[in-house]
Length: 308
Ligand code: AMP
Image (cartoon, rainbow, N blue to C red; front, top):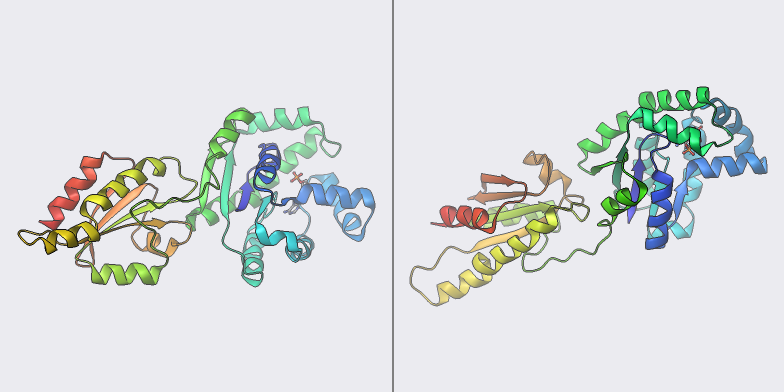
């Protein structure tokens, strides 16, 4: 699992990060904790960072990037990670993309904790951290809005952002996150591994059904069994059996799932706005799109209509 937790100070990212890191046995990288420790230990990093933390300002991007470069070079990062409090600016997000490419790490999922400002101030006051006076808290929230909020759009455009309601109690947020990291079960309809594979399926099959899905998407889990059933009923294998039997055999239908996180280019090409989305292609052209969780009959009706 490769995860970025994005959200304002006091959103509850740290609490959830600790639990998830424990569950998946992967490092939890809290840049705030690393910097506070460095200040306490009076290291070079601590000396550079101290005045920024005390003022509620951000530590300069170049300092943060050199810190993260060193962290990503550690062997424990190979099995996955949770970034909590990083990236916090657009330059950091872009530099992180480069770092991930250098270390051959996959694109992360991003969870955005959406919380109302009033609640944040209350929570931060209660936490009573040494570097938090009311003025510093307000400054940190202002800076979050100016510097960090643009990252929501940055990751939204890459279709890897999931928003959760951070106003809810800790246990409910944990519940909302509990579907993350579950193993994919592909059932009867298998996953299209790449854009190239998608293109060749599009060219080859008279009819292609694609279920755009992701491991973190709860409602997608309701659609998956319906698509599996569809594959069982209309899929290439059963259609071939039908044609071997002769009379009035239907055209074979290719029915697949497509993991949004691994195939953003395909989703972008067809303007997928949210998932679950199921698209029906005929002769290489998109014919119909069903968004959200539909009944089995709704999916099978489109297949019958297009294959007749
Ligand atoms: P946090 O505990 O995540 O709220 O971080 C505490 C403080 O550490 C922030 O107010 C910043 O001064 C500094 N800090 C943590 N992460 C970053 C970052 N990614 N970029 C710049 N400054 C950071």
